Image (cartoon, rainbow, N blue to C red; front, side, top):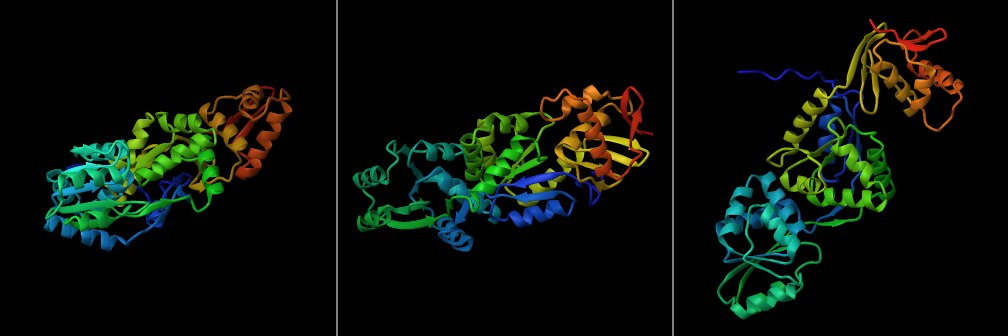
Length: 375
């Protein structure tokens, strides 16, 4: 039996992780912070609960005990949220079995897509995406004496519950939470731009609506192509999703996320720690200790260096040469702007030395350029 190598508590020092969720973000962030990661939480949506999870789970258990004849799914988001909540409670398989055995009525193509993603087949789809069409169908078929479960989300029941009850149905409502705008829209846009610039090592998604919202925000502010380039690159930013439903919107834009088959935050945190630990970046033994270059930071002798983007770019270029000389022209090429003044590269090296505090790490090679003092 093989044993996975132990990950040191500070193994993720220097890595930056963005969590896009509001619910349980603190729990996930704490798990990553304990490993040394710098965690930024920027919720792309706010959660406005209709009922608490306990009430939803209790209603679902009642549904499992007394299976319905008909189940109405009003939105894809609601179905995903319902299944995810039940998965956390350990009753998702039983719920899916009940849904599979009932006559499944869904409102619109998005709800049908969510049902298909969950392994379910809709028996009838309201193409108009209105509850009125569902109401008319069920009333025409007759619901007297039949048990009807209705999953609500967002706008509420649209009087569907009352109408079917008056027609003699035994109606059970299951109200999931609804989503609201982000608590801090400016902060969210800023974090999305940081992802586009490659300033995070990982982005974590915990719900499909949040994944969709993140993608839409990137599109609205004009950085979607850059974001996707970061998330699609083999050694780029890791996109991590708590489950297959959450990961589905990423697959739709050709991003292959790190995903656990079962929606467990703990399992996702462990997988992400392992993934980031394996992506430790370039490591060099230097006269000042081990230098580790990550996507968004540098660690020297277990000390995270406070470097500007320009200084990090210069250090990364020197490290990639592994002790060979790097010319001033080569350093000038990685600096922002289009200056042709070689003095700019000398200034950049001086600033890098000041930031590092270890003056002997970057050595000057007279009339040639600079090199790292590797051992």
